[in-house]
Image (cartoon, rainbow, N blue to C red; front, side, top):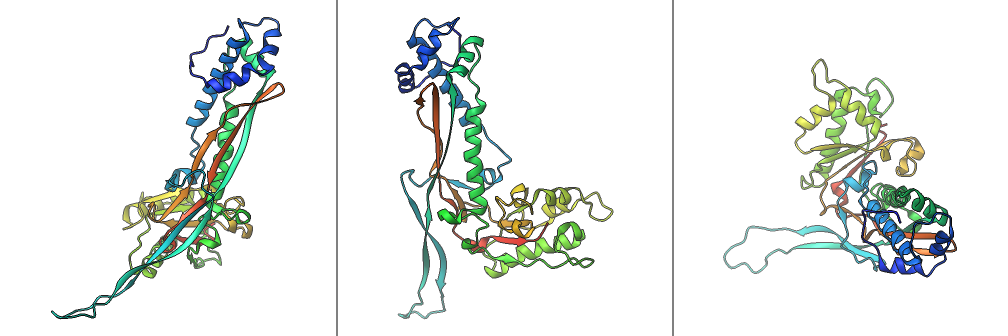
Length: 344
């Protein structure tokens, strides 16, 4: 019997395998190394548990939203919706005398909104021949299948975080329904283009300052966004284009001198050809997204992160269903964000 360093297994999965025809089919093959159906069932239950543990651990930094936005798991995985409020302060205060009874009222007004929670699902599995091969060579089952299932669910979550899904009532940060203000980029002085590649370093810095100033001005200097997310090719340009004859680049100067912006992040999801994640890509326009990276301002709602259910036996195959529950992006303070269309 092949040895494995992974000793944990799900008793229910071992029982399901034991009651299926799979261990018997493996035992009947030539050169079987198992003493009994029970030992074969436990071995493959351990193998599946090992695959599950590996796929839980895998992270994919190229999925920008999952590593950039604050994530909330507060909602129960059984909930169908999340109701939240966007708040605004109202009222005033005034100078009063010792016997004043007409004190002005200050209050907070909230507008309720509802986010839909949807399930995302896929699966992976192993045929009895793949189990035979694992038994014959003494190697573990291919964990890349579980990792692929994890990646596809994370990839769909990433798409929803950016662009949402109108048909299923899910909003992303670039969805029109978020009511995030748009910033109108001026054309470059030398060309009729808003693209940063066609602008001088000073013009790019003026655009960034103009974006931050619009947020500050419209919120009476309450909101101070600290993170600028730009298309991947724009980021490369900012990181390598020198500022005059100095050794400073546009990016290094921006990070060193900007009073509020502390982080500039590349995101291929904002490219002008990323139609899955950038709604403005249909117009061949890349987007810059400026926001305050704070869970009080916005959150990516994932009531149930990636979950692998117990195996299901289907004829001579074991299938592992996978699921997640996602509600997209909730933006509590839309005025703390800004979208600039046409940077690339």
